[in-house]
Figure 1 (cartoon, helix red, strand yellow):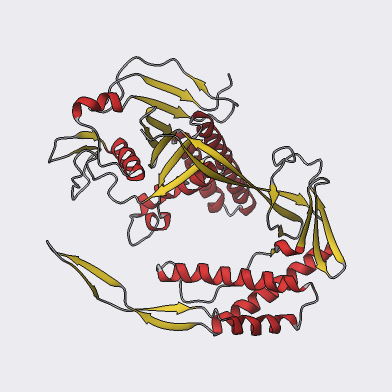
Figure 2: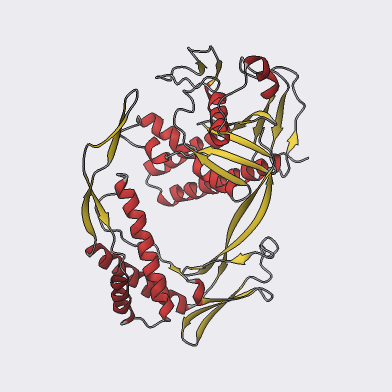
Length: 437
């Protein structure tokens, strides 16, 4: 087990405040025109050059690195001269404060950089990005905060301001002593991000294997943890059928109603799950696999039936919500369910639910195996202890579930029987994260 250590937890919470001001809508219209114009100029000045990715060929004593193919990569113009010329061009038709032009340029580069990364990975086409959503991102230099009065003053034009207050709002107590980040203007509301930084004393590590119907965790302090995601899957399957019926009947309003209900219930479930896990494992680092869901939904790599099942489980949303409350770390998912945690041997194929090492004979359920390998990968351990020490190191099993209603976690009556798996014994505890005490 790892010793106690101090880590910094950065938290961000975003809340919206309703605003009805024609000046905001006019600003957003100008902002979007300037943003698309900036993207057009950057696109016209992209330089395409060939790069030669290298492949490694390993022999017994030598590692040989050779280029084996070439690809064309876009390079964005980043020189100070180009940016100055771009800024001067935008300033000619700018009726607002100068810092709004800087905000437009920074947002345009952010969009183009995101497109470039996706294009290199083969996830985006060679087409110019188009801005469709109406928004305006405000620079911090355009804002003046009064934390005592809980007021933000946003500069629109020289001498013209927009004042937004969060005093008396329902979330005011939640963000007491938090700092305000860069706000985002919408036509009818203002999105305000609040940021906080605190030092957390880490006392344990929980490694999670993300599966279709469950999150399977492992911690030497608790043992194995199984979070049941079947209620979430059932809810999404029910709404898939309802949406299909509404779509076949041509009832667009009913279809959109079911889409909104499904999204709200999914968010409610994940919020409860994140809050429950944060209270169940305080002062812990939660380690997840860095999954690329786009690969799991690819038509070339995954069958249609499997793609639909993968799309139902929002792994990244669960990780993001949990990261708002606790420390979350991601590791590579490579071979987590095919490697032996004791001797390090990696099998070539993954067949069946039970892993059996052909070298040392270690046997375990693959979901539990993956959580142990993720824990070992994060802690950089060399492997599990020997068989005579394993029962003491791996303790019991904790079953966790979320119900649609309720407020606090409750421990059910523990079942005095061995937990699943051939290598572990001990008490199995059931916990319902959200059932009222």
